[in-house]
Amino acid sequence: MDMNEVVQNKIDYLLLAKQLIPAVRKAGNVIIDIYQRGAVAQLKPDGSPVSDADMAAEAILLPAIKAAAPFIPIVSEENSASHNLVDAEQFFLVDPLDGTKEFLKSDGSGAFTVNIGLIENKIPVMGIVYAPALDRLFFSGLNAGAFEMTNERSFKIGVRSLPFNGSVAVASASHMDSKTDQWLNARGIVQTVSIGSSLKFCLIAAGEADVYPRYGPTMEWDTAAGDAILRAAGGRVEGEDGKTFYYGKPQYLNTAFFAFGSLI
Image 1: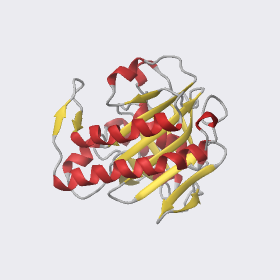
Image 2 (image 1 turned 60 degrees about the horizontal axis):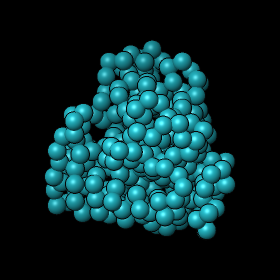
Image 3 (image 1 turned 180 degrees about the vertical axis):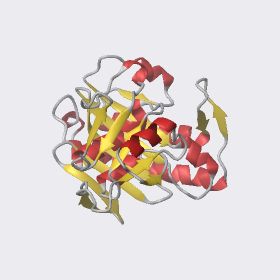
Image 4 (image 1 turned 90 degrees about the horizontal axis):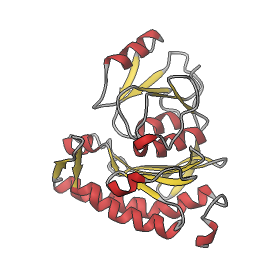
C-alpha cells in the first residue's frame, strides 16, 4: 500500500490495521520478554506506573505508525509532548502497554494489551488490541467489521444476542468501585468477569460478554482501540447521558462510559 493512500479521508482502515499488526506483534514479543525476566517500574507524576516494557513497546510502535501514515499525528500515553495536540480531525491514540498494573503483578493472568486506535471526527474508526500473554489479537476497520487473528488466520467476530440466563458484565480487575456495583445491581446483572485492560471491549465484541460499565478514571488511549473494535463488531459505547461516546476531549480524559453488546 502506498503511503499516500493512508492520509486524510482516503484511508482503507482495515488495510491500515493489517499493515500495523506486525509492529504490534513485535511490541508484544518485547513486552513478554520483559514480563518473563521481571519488569522495572516507576511512578509517573499522576501516580500511575510506567515500566521499561511501556517504553520499549512505544519505541517499536511509533516509527511503524509514522511510516504507515506519516501525515496523521500520534497521541501516545508515554509521549507527554503529544498530549498537547488539539482539534485534529484525525489522530492515533496509542497505549504501548495497557494494563500496566496487571502486567506488574506477574500473576499469570496476562490481562495486558498493546493498543492502537485511530480517531476520525471524534469517532474511533480503526483499532488493534493485542494481548501477547494470551495470544489474542483483535483488529477492526470502520464499515469492514471486527476480527480476531489466530495462527495468522483471521475470522470475523460480532456481539451476541442477549443470553437467556442473563447478561455477563466485564469489569476492571484493578478499579472496581461502588458505583459500578450499584449500576449492575440496578439491572439485575449478577455475572461478572473481572479482567484488566482493553480486553473488556474485545470480550464483548467477540460475544463472550455483554456489557462493560466504567465510572473509574480512564484516558482516551486506554479505550480507543477496544472501542473501535466493539463498534465494528456491532456494539456501542455511550456516555452517562446516553449519547455516543466521543474522543478528543480536554487532556484526553474520559468521563464515565458504558460499552454494550446487544444489551438493551
